[in-house]
Length: 301
Image (cartoon, rainbow, N blue to C red; front, side, top):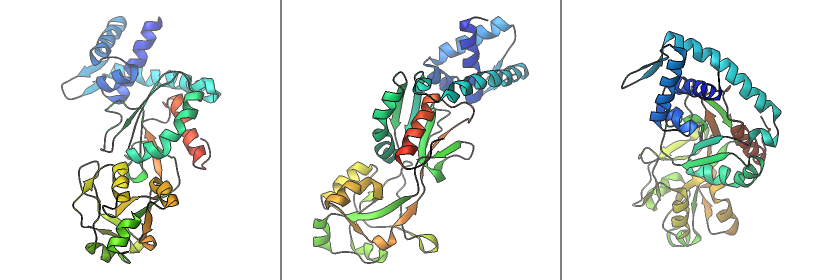
């Protein structure tokens, strides 16, 4: 076996794990056709058929599955040995692709980037910020960041923060003109900035906690799917906004926004990072997780 054979074997294992030439190709920085050619080359070298390919699915043959199982043991042992070093240099290689929704990117990833770049100077990091629900494995990401209740059940999930808090806020100018609502029922007489979810559905404001929590359909003609724009609109006095408290910490501190209906603030799930296999985690990902957890008062992994 030479270096090319080992690279093809690792690529083959990624294809079996992800059930996708495209996802594995993205992971290795290849085109799907190059990945397909590598598998054909490996099959020719070994003299056996490794994968069954159809228009809808990729599945290993019996011999291919057996080979993948044996390869997984070897490559995972190598990866674990490198991760066990737990030094800055241990994470200084490779490509890392993360998909995160906007609030997580703003609150967690952006503050951690300077330290990550220092600790992992050779990692090629790609951050894709979007709020739509995705399959991170099928789309070639090493990890995703979402709220805990949105993480697929078959994923490994690691909490990055403690519980969050959702609040209603407004500019002093809006409250001076329209008055302060005292109960959620008072919202029917106010203008609310509508929140559009990643799946293009409108979000009902969840107010209260425990058995007293209720989802409210609120009135308003402006709908926004971006928190930063929502905050800007709220500061301009265009309406009440429903946001993560952590996202408006600066505005609450400087008085450009005020809490409204504070007794009805709602608890929210912690932010979680998730990925497909506990045994096959990019060393750079582990470093990033520990940076974010440390910044949020959680213990390192």
